[in-house]
Length: 168
Image 1 (cartoon, rainbow, N blue to C red):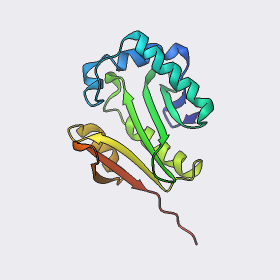
Image 2: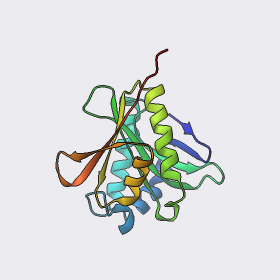
Image 3: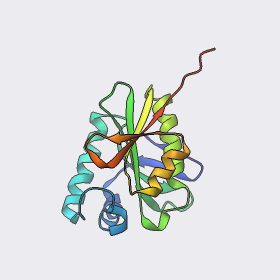
Image 4: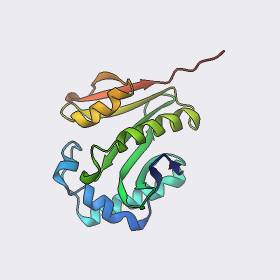
């Protein structure tokens, strides 16, 4: 799967993307809301290998590299995966710190909503977010995702976007 937006290319990861995974997973600001500590280069390689293997198991789903169309710089990662509910997909993103507050998360979210509806037949899209993660919460709120409590605790939220089909 490759998705192009106005400024971004969302594509499958390759082994050459290991530095992106390592950088994001070892920046305290980037992992603050992940629920895990930093990752060694070996853990990053294992994770990247797992993601790349999953492309053949679940085509069109998984974790993807996000890069700039202009200069091909790798700005972050994004994912879209099947959730437990029928026709529902979970989305998310993590960007290198220098690319925060530039509208990239909004661009990724918009395209994943369109992809989930158009290519996957989704009826809803969800995103799990920590309550304290104000930046991510604001992205989903801009798209009118509905806020729900997280089933695993008080510190998290689940945002849900209902896809409404207009049949005329």
